[in-house]
Image 1 (cartoon, helix red, strand yellow):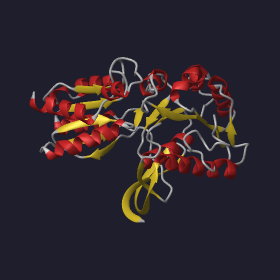
Image 2 (cartoon, helix red, strand yellow):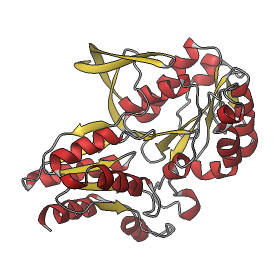
Image 3 (cartoon, one colour):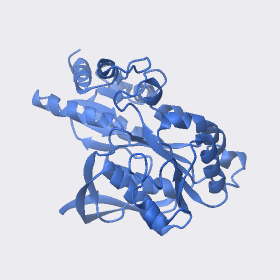
Image 4 (cartoon, helix red, strand yellow):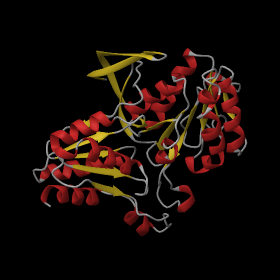
Length: 349
């Protein structure tokens, strides 16, 4: 076990307090961090339950819920039919009646069928009831491309859902962040959509043995730097960090900011970083039109224009549907080579 000085946050409902503590760390996979977070909350609160396709008998499509049926039983870990609209609606109704459902979608691509429940019901419950009803529900599952899965299984949904008032959206592949955020999401009184990555469930990271929470709405600086700010989230963080390592070999110091939360978005951390480096590259797996990268670019040029020494550059996926060919996948997605070129462009224009 490693000992590491870590910021640990403990929450009681809406009140979050931070403390610094020496804790034991171990390296675990993203799927295990998510399972630990859900299981801890289910042990603490009998109103929390998990439902979705193959979450029980099969231990989850990506083995995130492995062993949870055995621990919590069939009334709290529930296999559903292949009917996203139906079981999402059951979850919303349960949340309005005092429970805290975790609804797992096998992929957010399939959750499009459930958007009526997510966008028209869960997101609007509080305002439509004039504050009388909350909807404390967590919708979660993988988003984005995962190799050669072609057009209908490779879309990213952060900007889709963040566009709707009433929904909170979190997106990460870092196991430490994932565990802290999923626990906060389960305790939140508003609907939360958690975006994971189908290709990163085996991704390893250090996670404390002790319980902790990470507040929704805070970005994290994963790597400090002075020459250029790279902002990203989810599995594109690995692309951003790889680019930063290569840039350092050429004497370029890149600061890497992990959004973690898409809505609410931590504008302050981004803008403070840009004020330090004076340059910004945004790496976003989604399409360029009306996406998260566009929102960040607008906000930075509005609030930190005088600090920019070069135009903002966005590195997005190609503005087309993803083809099946492996050659198309490579050209379609952001990669370290494209990020390095963008950073050099803002530095040497």
